[in-house]
Length: 388
Image (cartoon, rainbow, N blue to C red; front, side, top):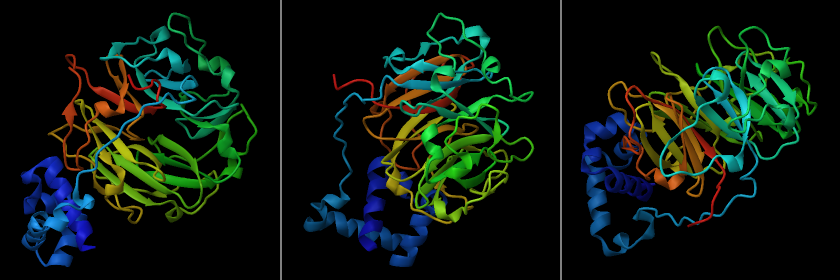
């Protein structure tokens, strides 16, 4: 325990500088670390003294456990790189793009959507499924053969999704995508923008591609689903909020409920804070983070210990003034990331473009923002190119 705390403090110092180790800063932004250090060493000064001992003791100084973790990035094109990329826009557009049509570029590029569908908001890669479940803003889901979903090829017109799903209610539109495989085993979990979550047995969805529309979960007035995921009962779940907090808890903290249920609180939110994304934590190596003002970074996921569902969580990043987090996605060093903006610009780039930093770090700007432009979202896609 003592060595783990010392290692953690050293990582913060090396990634964020000496100011990050001021007692007031740590007690505010690294509450779990601060409390553990006080319990272990009696005071924050005592913890820093142990760090000095560790760094000045030859054996400890040569220990690999206190060195910064370094990346060895070997990019190899993913077998599914050309699979469909399902895409949602700010004006209720929904279609898919061939994975090979969205290239890695040196800077953001304008990608106007067909038919005035607004700016591209978020993207999902679910492999090469024989079918998908499409979840709507009203909590219903529709089973579709992939080829029925409109494909956009740049200059071509796009069939409106209302022609494909005439059963949509008024003001209902597609928001999330899950592979049809999710209806076969395990559990399907959703999380809403207002911090509600519910898990249902996969059998509740079923594997049939029913286009008529079935209720997947109930929503409180004004709330919308922000994430839907499929996995085993013993997985973990991570939720990230717009105020730069994240909570990591055991999925078993959410008992299975029927489809017609609102669910339980997954994270304590305050003011206008909302959930920006949620996903299973099992196998996650890193998180990529981006704010509305365009500050970006990556952080190691194992810095987030699991805790009880419904708490305030741990700091994902520090924010400037009115800035807010708009995207947090799981990734590996070899992943591709896609940034989308309110001005319709899209940038597919390598994950390593985002610098590895500590949790309290604000991040670095990666692109020059246009006047009045802000970041809409962040998506993770499979590796599209080999090392150059």
